[in-house]
Image (cartoon, rainbow, N blue to C red):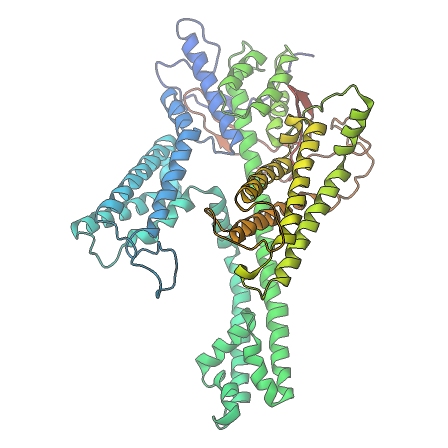
Length: 628
């Protein structure tokens, strides 16, 4: 392959405004090849920067943060799985405190007649747990503020709100302890959901979408309010002014005054118990139905559907913008990593595959994607250009599908025929049919024994049928293991689900037979062990009904046939008759924006880019496009 050509205007060049002012003294910069004692330190810093930038690209994070050696270590530590798990556990803990704090709702029943007095935690117990959570959140906002810098911290409303909520919570916590937990109001309880909101990117996007949709939703809401007010006045004019006694009392109740009439029509518009409002008036005069029909047609079928369409359209548009922003962040991080690694080459253009391999060894990435990228790198020795580097990391957008374990090979023709028979999908259909038959028998006996007390029931026939079906389930599991092999059987989640329930049913059936012996006429429930015969039968039936969920993966809508074509520029396999297009993105922001890398980077811009499908294989895996 030809050597990569030098770019006419590099991404992070000084011509685009990079002044090199972010390079700290005493640290070898990545802007050029270093020679001398500081060369290893500068090279390690560049590799660490590339690692963080690629991790930011994988997680769709912003690269606008500090890039010195200490900040890089802190950034990787903060975004590690352990720290994020601790943060998630802290959010769960502070939200779960509401179940045990006074007044506690942690009881077995919500009926006040039977509910025992809930446990009241002593003063200081929940406050101590809350203090630990607030300390974790304080460390969280401190690390975020340090990484992005004070200038960016002031521009981020989420971080500012995070700081304000923490300060208010700490003040309220101090007030609670000073009053020995006897304060009449705890403000910090109202602010706790913010911690979940602030650490969830999806909830942030939802709130932004709602904020953008408020103007259009407000216009339709105003139309709904006018609609309700007009028909409220019509209803009061139609259904009032009569004597409020006798059979008309119920009809006139809904429109006696303005608040009741408005509430009645709001119920008629939004809830399912609308006959309560319509039927009393309709029973008096059939012509009153015109009023309710007109109200329902305009309100429910037009205005409410219009509001739903606006919400759907806004969320759909915001979803596309969010995907474009995520793609731009990924491309920006990948391109910045390329620019940092290219500074290690003598010409300053191109990236050595060995450097990329060193970076991949440190990147927190699942092994399947890492092996797929490393497989591509091992097959080449030339420098990687910017486009090749970008295409290399497009593998992150693909979904890795592991190949099914090979089936066992048998020498006997009879065994091979049996393997083909029991490994065919029609054998699964037979198992689904048997599960349906077992479910039908349980339903029949539930209907027949509905009016019989449990102690008077004869479970002889149902016990025999359950034994037969459970034996079939066991035989089906063993035959599938024979046909697919143990690893092939365990590779399917449906088979694992079937196998676990079959083993549980078998243990339960053996326990039932050991305690209550084989089914016989007059096989009535008794209490000989931990559970009565009736309880054990009910438990087995519930597990059988739960096992029937195995048919859900089989209930799929067949996909539409793809056109027989080949997309230009996309690699396809000759064995596939139809083209398989991956996600093609467009509409990325045309206006470039500056990038600030820190000590080893300089400012630059990133333009729009596109992504298509790519296929690669290696290490027993197959990489294909992720469906969007």
